[in-house]
Amino acid sequence: MMDDLDAIQQRLWQTEQEILDVIDKICVENGLRYSLAYGTLLGAVRHGGFIPWDDDIDIMMPREDYERLIEIWPTVAPDGYLLETERMYDDYVHTFLKIRKDHTTYLQFDSERTVSHHKGIYVDVFPADRRAPNWVSQKLQYLAFAVFLLFNRSYPQGSGRTKFIQEKLLSLVPKRYHRQLSNWAGARSRRWDKDTSCELIFPCTIRDCSRFYPADLFEHLERIPFNGKKYLAYRDRDQFLRIRYGDYMQLPPEEERVWKHHPILVDFTKNYEELAVDEGREETI
Image 1 (tube, helix red, strand yellow):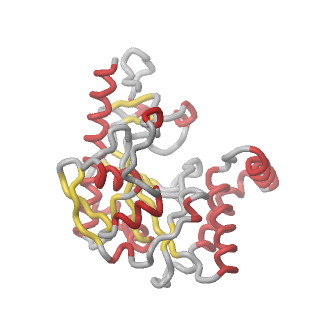
Image 2: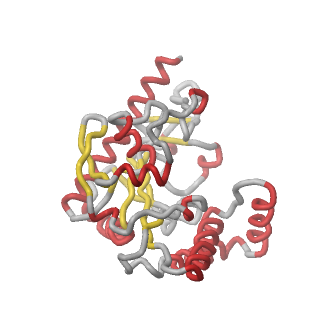
Image 3: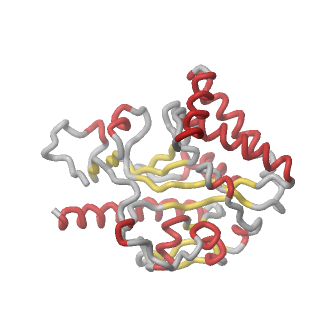
């Protein structure tokens, strides 16, 4: 069984890197900036490739380049690769885009079986926004980020009082207005994006809304090795990784070295809708 899991992991990594190659080519040809991010960047620095227990690829882009990628994707992307954002599907719960490979399947939860968007293997692309410049506007921006995140996914996270408050807020607004409210709050949170002197922020989770990065982070990029190839990354990788992870060269306890996104179904040749409902042929992890 372990050999099967290792083989699936290796093939998953190969497919994700194939998607990354497509993104890299499009960005380079169109003058778009990006950097390896999160565990992918950490893996490049600490392991020379994937963290052995990691299971995905993350990259980051400045908001203006991120929006440009969405705009040009239909005309520049090769066949077989799809771009998804929350603007395209009402049941898309992420606040960042995914690039997926067609004719693949990657399910994490049973609830994903009925979503309207594609369910294939993907690379996550996170946008960078600008932090508000003063104390009052920063508090308002944080509130806007919180509303943006909550009403985009339409379900609470956390526990205790925090979860209770989220549940109450969600119940006060009819479900049909959730995405509209999320879009309004998202636009309010991005009011400072044209001010390149402001620090950067990556608002994909509420915790990340309290992490701030140098304003010129994307102005100094270089190609670094990752899993046998080279991709763009911040020149000052140490600063980014210390802000995000602290002592990032210290390995986590062995019991924490597990896959972050544990899929229930993986297929490398068929979309979910193309799969026969047959447990005997599903490649599960």
